[in-house]
Image (cartoon, rainbow, N blue to C red; front, side):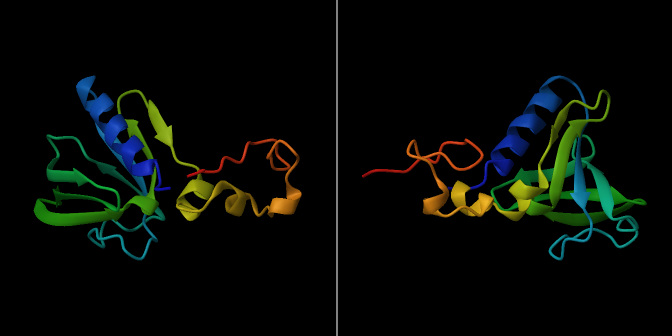
Length: 139
């Protein structure tokens, strides 16, 4: 199953903009596929303003967040892998969502693989040791 993170990013971005606030994303600046100006990459995390008044051509697809923004008066294309996005929130009030690191690292894996469980470690109800159900698709 695909990651829910890009869907949540799109929904929360729309919600923040619809409420007249400024959407910002917190990004891991050490991600190898991140394309931002080096002058912005000074810290291990970077906050990027993705409001419609700050960027052009914003696209949030299932793999990347991309847009054109101005840094120190110069336009730059920005490419942020979805895995590098750690949070999205409104600048004015901090409302938004932080994405768990485990979700970013293990996107696309089945729940039992994420927890490191084998089928033998499940009870008769199909629950893992943590008590979470393990659902199966039956065709």
